[in-house]
Each structure stands twice: as C-alpha cells, then as structure tokens.
Length: 127
Image (cartoon, rainbow, N blue to C red; front, side, top):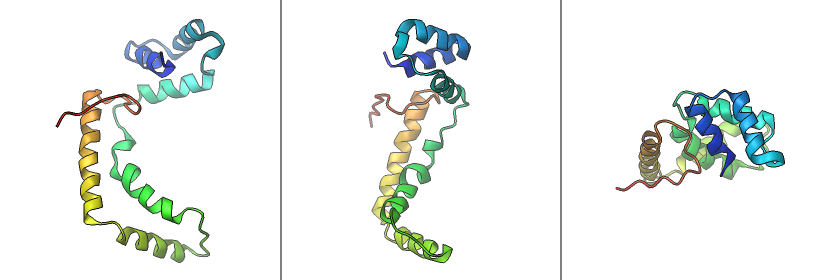
C-alpha cells in the first residue's frame, strides 16, 4: 500500500503526524519515507480543501508558455514579455475550450474526493 494513502488515513482520523510516522515505521521498516517527507505529505494532506492545481493557469497556460520558451536566453525583460505574448497569441480558441472542459473534470474530481489531494488516484468521471 502506498505510504501516502496511509498518511491520508491518519490525517482523516486525526492521528498526529508523529504517531503517523511511528506507525509507518512499524509497517514499512527501512522502506519508510524519511521523517521530513512524511511531515511534508501530512501537512499537504491536512491543508484545507484548496487545490492550486484547479487553477487553469497551473495545468494549461503556464506549460503552454514554458515549453516553447525553455532553454532560450533573453537579454531583457522586454524580450521575455514579447516572447510570452507571441506564445499566448498562438493559443487557439479550441485550446481554450479543451482547457475549460478539462478544468470542469478537475472540479468534479475535487468534489468526488471531498477536497482531498487526488493526483494519482484513479477517479473516473462518467459524463
């Protein structure tokens, strides 16, 4: 069983992070995530049900800008702005329509998972 699921179980059942780490150590022995990773996951899973990944800029717009600009050097801020505008202008209406359809699916996943972290979970939306 994925240790993240165990941590999620502990968060849901209000088991303290230190106790969750001890339980993982008993269950997984030397294969246990290190303490800092357990605490990081615990903190992330205990956060209020806000997922920055629900923002279209995170999963659609920034990658569309970042990929074509990656590895290029810019001498000035103006060059960066110009290159960014050029990439933005390349995004089609259909790209945006698909973005919003995908965004709606992410909303549904968030609702189905009750606001919990859902990346990697196999949640299927029936339309």
